[in-house]
Image (cartoon, rainbow, N blue to C red; front, side, top):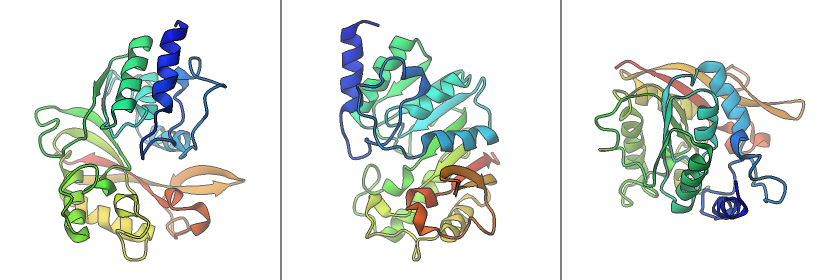
Length: 254
């Protein structure tokens, strides 16, 4: 890899958007981008990946990574043996970064620089795994009708979840508590994990089986995702909003 290519990759990685500044680098790129690049604040990508890979295998799978940001989960899925990853991201800088990186690494990654529309995208395709990390609470902002009320947006979020039920075998779902990321706009009255879990249960009824729910716990100063329990279902404000977001592994009934 020559200096020019590396500089292009570093520059693209450092371009900012409202959703950047948090994904860590995948292992495949750490030999190219390392100590002289400012590392963004982690949102527990490795811990989330560890949980997901304890529940499902990427080996030989076709994967879709929606809202893929700078590609952490895309590249890690490839590293874990995925046959192909379809990376979908609306931010042009992020998409260019992933496109450049996948060319340099020679990986089977389709890069689609667009916001997933949840209406026609993947309409005639079927994949093994969909990664839907922290996307749907931006409905009415990054995608969907901006005139929606919160109540309308919640119903559309349910539709967004179910959009994939006939397009994939498994889906990994995580969502935030704040509509459009606005801390003054709670999607659920008390902002609790129980409310979110009830929402997802009502959304998936008839279309998906909830295979497992992972909840972050702090153990010895380290974050680790554990199976849902009567203890960790309780809201823990000391962990912050992000670490109160469960991860749902959904299996399609379709």
